[in-house]
View 1: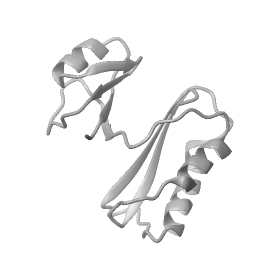
View 2 (view 1 turned 90 degrees about the vertical axis):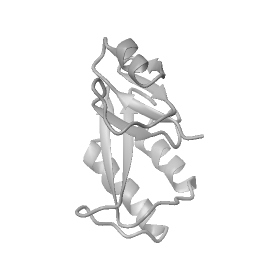
View 3 (view 1 turned 45 degrees about the horizontal axis):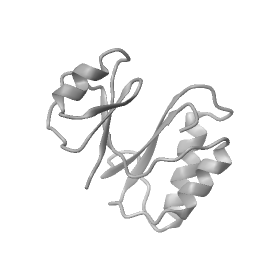
View 4 (view 1 turned 135 degrees about the vertical axis):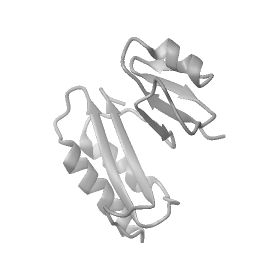
Length: 124
């Protein structure tokens, strides 16, 4: 079953969860299982393929290297960070993109068929 995460303004998670018949995951995030074509209370929606905790960028890259990607080419990686980290979003985008590229997928920032969205919130 597909799971989706919606990024919302902190404080309206209950309203957004009601809109999509989902539940609050944590501050600023809701979890739901039915994608809609339009949202009134949600800023960003992505399919949650995997979730894990980490301490360093190396921990993240090790998890990404283990994954067997099944995406449509061309792809791009987009990163959003909330919290304090010792790395930049652009570094993560580049490094994860390189890992996926090495598995045989074509990178193209415009036009793209797949966006791999990496959502960092604190250490998750």
